[in-house]
Length: 194
Image (tube, rainbow, N blue to C red):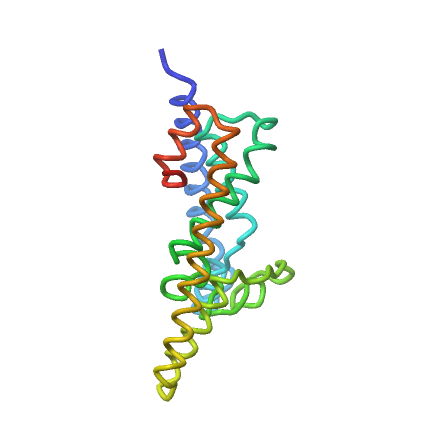
């Protein structure tokens, strides 16, 4: 007998497949309407647009499903899980403003102000790690920056990451208090808990 998770996975795959097929069928028609290079260029710009709020919602839904949390449970778990997720990115250096400039990091400014960002997207304040990362990258981009200044910026980034690690440990502890053993195990597999 198929489990609920197997059936749910099959339904999700089917829906995604149908969406991809319908999108690919509509694209040739759009190219013909817009004509030539202009239509292709517009489509490329549309693909580059990134809606961070939509991506966050999709991630939350995926995590909620993986944890098997009801909507009622998610009201308690959700904010704690997302806090751990954000602090995890900051502590590791792989969030916005992390490796390779991150999304909306030094390479494009805060979300909402970056090229290709959606107009009206709320701009959130940078974290201490993001600010320190951006300052260090700015120092490195300037070839005349003195080594002492680079060292100062590097120390500030390390301190911000260390603080984020401490905040992460506290947030993980708070999250563990409201998890079932199965949910905790799932978050360990996902890399959110140790």
